[in-house]
Image (cartoon, rainbow, N blue to C red; front, side):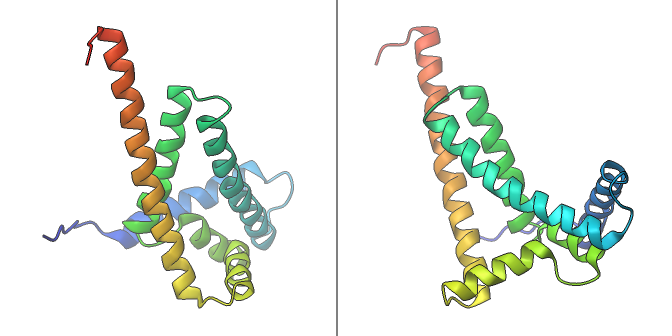
Length: 159
């Protein structure tokens, strides 16, 4: 079975990327209007978003297991997964490359990590996508389980 999604990926990516560049230029115009500086600022934010998502994911399943927080984290992970798998690109990396007129700072970091582990870059990216897909599936099942338990307790259904 094969699903075909007929969208103009280039238009979607260029639209999202231009809006992201406009947002970054607006938010950080007080620091600089130079595209390269804004590209590095976006690269730092890209790295921070990656780390913060993992921290909030850990917190939402251990320290503060609120259903709304788990749903929010799952929604954010799903949006990241959609852009990586469906669009086959990371919008932040495209914006970083356009701003810096070269390789994206976050892309260079990922390349250095793959070199450190002596894994070919393409294989490293495939492993990241596989890990994203498995984590989305696992956390979706956990979220469905939490909702199921909540509904059983709310409606008083005894099993």
